[in-house]
Image 1 (tube, rainbow, N blue to C red):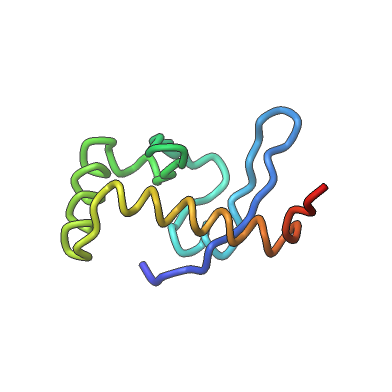
Image 2: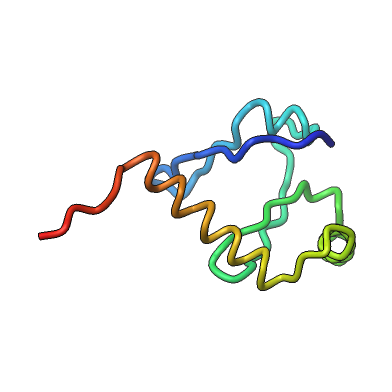
Length: 96
C-alpha cells in the first residue's frame, strides 16, 4: 500500500468516524467493512478486519523493526504529529 499523508477526521455525535475516501480506497475498504482498532499509547491503529489482530501486531512489529523504530519512538512521533496538526488547525495557545 502506498504511503498517505496524515488525515484529519471528526468523530460525530454517535461516535462515528469517517475514514477519508483516499485512505479507504488504498486500504480496499468498502461500506460495511470491519476494522480492528488497537490502542497504542494515546493513539489508535486502525486496520482492516481481514487482517487478524495477531497478524496486524506481527506486521506492525515487522514494520517498526525494518524502520529501526521502537514503540516508544512511534508513540512520541505520533504525539509530535498530533501537536503539529493541532497547531496547524487551531494555531498556538495565547498566553493570558
